[in-house]
Amino acid sequence: MAEWIEFSHDWAYYITPETFDMYKVTGKVPVGSIVLTKTQETLDNDIKITNTDYAIAKSDGVVNLADKRAASKILAKQLVEYMRSHNEYPHNTSFDKAFKNRNVDVLYKASDYDKFKIRLTPEIVGNDPEEFLMNLNIAGKKKFNPQDDWKIEPAKSSRSKCKTCGHNIEKDLLRLGEPTYFQDHLNYKWHHFDCIADDIWGISEDKLSGYGSLGDAEKAKVRKAIWD
Ligand SMILES: [Zn+2]
Image 1 (cartoon, protein in one colour):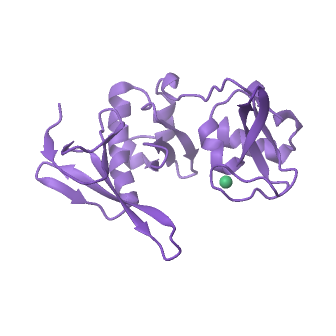
Image 2: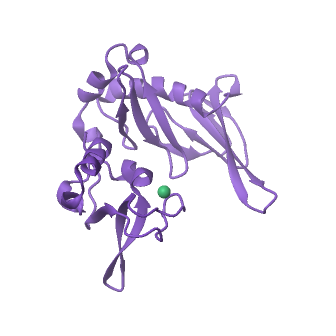
């Protein structure tokens, strides 16, 4: 069991490397955990934004990290350790991208608001990262399996708004429809494809209506993002 140290903050979370779960800080944190502290700032135009600072809990105290990237680097080492000992992905992580130089990005969703791209390099893994990941139990790589069909299509107009980022979806841009029911009537909440692709990773083709009608370039883009 990890050693714990005292730490207090009005609004903070820690990520335990043992499970990659994130918990609210209530007076203490385990040594080795990444600590996220949140502060709210009100801009001139009255818009409130939340700032996140990153730190690591060491046995003699919580030490600030330069930025999110620094936190991701520590998480990368912890992730490899986790994968080595469990032979699978933590439940809230998924494969994101492989690069020509053999680096691999893993997406880690600590919460809806705290997502990390964790880069695994040959140096961190000790061998080829992609091969390392491929040898893990595939069960750890959770595929999205919705109850109802999602929809994919080029936007028919520029009027729909992306429910993920809040911006308009330009006509002809690839959009994803999230099924939603109102009094038994099926409707779709739209998202930019790029904004939500990570969340539907591994969805089966028969749950993605409209895929068969896409053009070749669009099909390739979809395949790369959610099926490769
Ligand atoms: Zn968007």
